[in-house]
Image 1 (cartoon, one colour):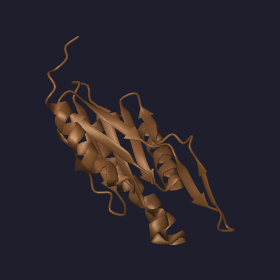
Image 2: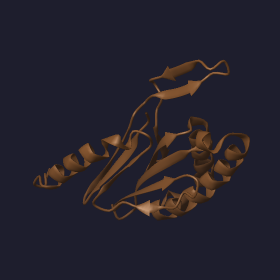
Image 3: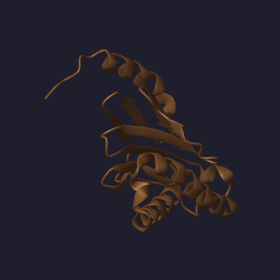
Image 4: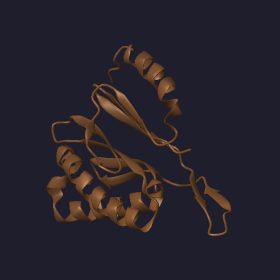
Length: 166
């Protein structure tokens, strides 16, 4: 089970993910590692979380980091929300050609802040990677989406808390 989630509040976002990677060796033996970082830094104002194919997610994130280095305007969250699907589709098609389609399944959650301080959140699911902006709500990605009901109740109760001012 893998899970990445994002919650968007009026004054910020929360990203969360599990840390387990599982795979089956050529001999059919199941393996796992619980030390995987599934929320990754793209730039000082952008982070991406993922659920699914680790290699495909890693390749996509590396390409996004290189794209930001070449074009710093991609640090603008809305621009990255347009770029991520293009890059993810490219690598997904390449990966899907080499494997069974289910093995190349991956989903991303993107969070970023712009110069005005506005924090935005989007989700993207393979194979189309259509951007879905999350506004004052949440989304859960991956096979761990069984927690969606619990998270929905928790999110609703958090929205009823008074604002905390520093």
